[in-house]
Image 1 (cartoon, one colour):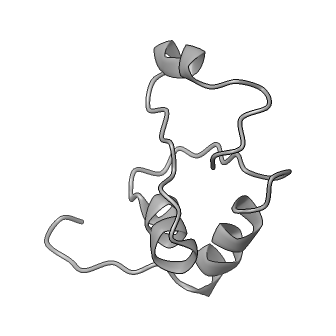
Image 2 (cartoon, one colour):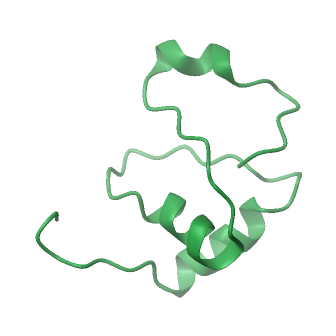
Length: 67
């Protein structure tokens, strides 16, 4: 995918709006395309916190407000 320009579609736009709310701000995915983080940045101007490995789970808290 690195040689193609990939943009988030309308589904990612809606997901970014939902994730920018305080209640539903977590996404668990096996995708490696970074479209969720890109949509949050483009559409909501929010930098997402990405936890790529389970060993990094200590970096987040249950009441974390950041997507």
